[in-house]
Length: 311
Image 1 (spheres, rainbow, N blue to C red):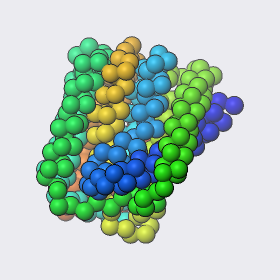
Image 2 (image 1 turned 30 degrees about the vertical axis):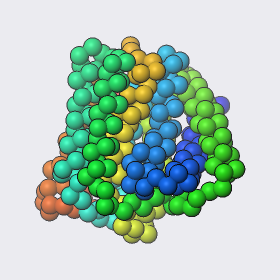
Image 3 (image 1 turned 90 degrees about the vertical axis):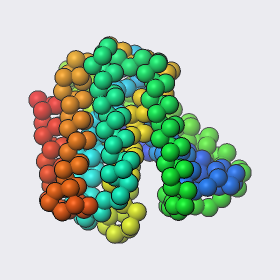
């Protein structure tokens, strides 16, 4: 039954995030907001909604390890699992923004999270505010710097929806996210108790992989179609948003406290390791591209993470 709760919860989170995305983009287009602004704000927020809802719900219920482990595990899975799987199908060209903004901001956000956790073993409201302020500054900087860039919106969201559909998708999305988070958190906690493992292990493995499934599916489909919009920047952007937005908002609503010691002595270092690994992979041996062998390396590294986490 707990596994069923988790599966149903994940399904509702995926559907809810998709419906919310359609509603949010439809409303933004109706208000005549530029695509670059929609892409960097509305789309990013909507696609991070499942992680946000799970983290907020977990923190409010007193399951801090799920609230934090969801983000840490998702960031590891995005690079090790999602990017690794994509590279097995198709090579990825690295854009110039990777060196200038994307990777530096990812490293800043990752080490800032590490510093906050190392400092006092929690994420306070004030630290959540710092995360959000940095995110706002980053978004404003990107928008000003890329005013002339044309951004492709996710498939199925380009049309301006009628008002009744915008309202319907918004209602359905919100309800599905709420119901999905209830089922997933309940199933994850019960599963951890029944198997005698910590909530942290369930969070950084089952929950984080589940919330990364939409990115994995869409990236693999795009890779098979050889669509040009696959970019390492998309994955890095998701990781940045997970830390600065998801943890920022969660900590402001309910500080994340009483964190499992292994989250600080093990999981956070894996997250930093995957973040740091990207730069040498991009630079060596051929600058600006990632190929099949890098994909194998990332998947092996992710398998090692799962092995050492579960044993």
